[in-house]
Length: 94
Image (cartoon, rainbow, N blue to C red; front, side):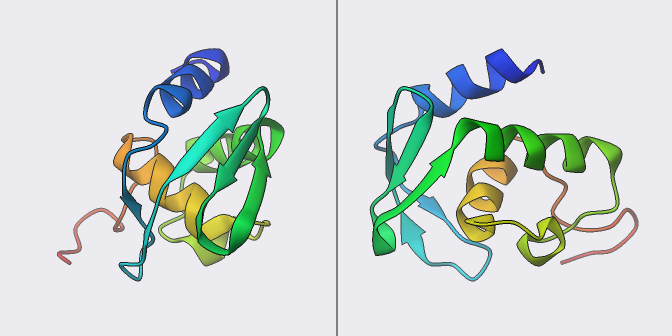
C-alpha cells in the first residue's frame, strides 16, 4: 500500500472503534494531516504514521513499544487492524 492510500484508508475508518494492544478502546477523527484520538486527547500527525509504516515495512516490529514513537499504542491499533502491522513473529501463536 502506498502512503497516500494508507492515509486515505485511515481517514475512511475515522469514528470506528479500535483497540490498543492492551485492549483499550479508542476512536479518532481526521482533519487534514492530523488524527485526533478521543482517548487522552492525543493528536498524531500523518508524517508520524508514515514513519511508523516505513518501520513496519522493514519488519521485525511486533508491538507498539518497538515503534518507539509518540502515540505508538494508537498507531499500532490502527495499523494492525488495517493489516499493515504483523501482530506476532512468524511461527508464534498468540
